Amino acid sequence: MFDIDRVRADFPILNRQVHGQSLVYFDNAATSQKPQCVIDAISHYYDHYNSNVHRGVHTLSGEATDAYEGARVRIGSWFGITEPERIILLRGATEALNLVANCLASELSAGDVVLVGETEHHANIVPWQQLAQRIGIQVQPIPVDDTGQLSLEAARALCASHPVKVIAVGHVSNAIGAVNDAQGFIDLAKSVGAYSVIDGAQAAPHLRVDCHALDADFYALSAHKCCGPTGIGVLFGRRELLEALPPWQGGGDMIDRVSFSGTTYNALPWKFEAGTPNIADTIGFATALDYLESIDFDGAMAWEDQLHRSLISGMEARPEIEVLGHPAHWVSVCSFNVKGAHPTDVGTLMDQLGVAVRTGHHCAMPTMEHFGLPGTVRASLAFYNTPEEIERFFQALDRVIGMLST
Image 1 (cartoon, rainbow, N blue to C red):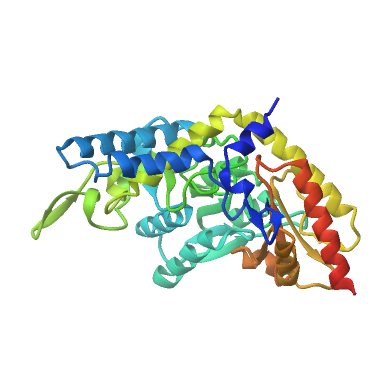
Image 2: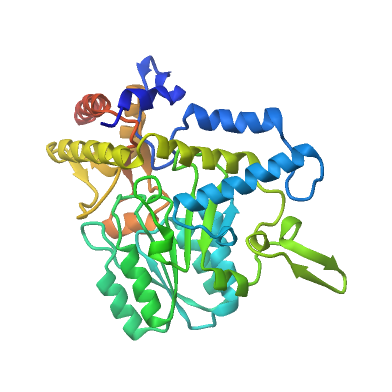
């Protein structure tokens, strides 16, 4: 059985008080909390072998390089990728998606169509819009249905009538929690000769993501959703594409030789890793994934799924609550509004009662526009949450409903 008491003991922040109340942290879609082992791993790097990597001949540099490159291999292995050259370490999913869009600019022409899911995070919309302004591509939204799911059938129809060259979708919606048919969109892209770009930032914390099996051209994710530190993420790319595409940024490890007569670039994966890397947090990311393995990740996800079902059931039992979407397969997230109340007011009052939730558009303005909403309150769970916290959440929410209805 999943040992929730042991797991919660690993997260020191869960013991703190907020406004005189025990913290209930339901903002995990924004960032997850970190176990002590991750905090210790980052501290240990700075305490014992802080040094730059790759070019130093002294002991500390060698130790740092071994730890950093070892972390790369461990990160890739967790997501089914065993070739280090396909594992590009970056600041997060946002930088990864910007890198893909800017590098693919060399392969796109005016009039080419990029299909982007209507429920995407802004990080998977804006880079393509910037490319449209630069080279004249067209960005077309893939419609979302009333349940919150992206329509694969609509995407097929768009491919039949447009010169589609890229299909960019989120594996899991950060605003709704819908698990989209990533494999279906990847297969569709292959069938029409388009590139597939998957934003896996919200999928990685809640699903067994096997990037080798999915076989997308590009798959991006962030560490800080997966109990890892902020400022580090990864892009998994198809090797032949990474070799063919030009680098995005210049300097540091991405070069082989620099001369005013010409510059040559480093081999993969360093070709796309300009500048001093985030060494400590890469080590922390690998430690976080080791931790998820140690606690029985599948058992943790089953526990989280039970909590999510309980949360949704309680929401739907309250007539004052409107839940955003109800997909056939969703994880972790429940976006909702209290009828007649502004989301910010609800979130502020919940905080006074010790419950942390997110309010606003969740970097998914087109999603809110589709459903005709200015924003929502978003409660999002992790495996370290408990049924008692669900009960605390509803006690607080009922009090807030009472305050705002008077």
